[in-house]
Image (cartoon, rainbow, N blue to C red; front, side, top):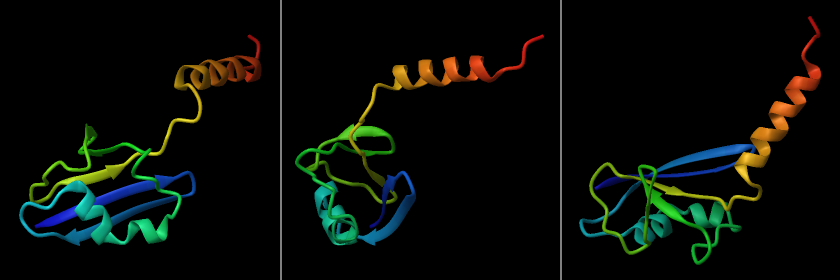
Length: 96
């Protein structure tokens, strides 16, 4: 089976294709891909993973063509970021 592995950091995005046997799990595919060597900061005990944007467990069995995603932890509240961006945009807009 062909599986895709996706991971992104702020300045780099990686997409790896990996062949895995039938019955392979998310963890099997991640380990086989070599991504853990490229990004030693990935901690599968702490970080969440998913298939096509849906959270899944490491022992979930994959289907041919699945896209496995490794998610980075959220370091700030998205609502706070939006409020801050909106406030900064209001300050920079020209007066009428």
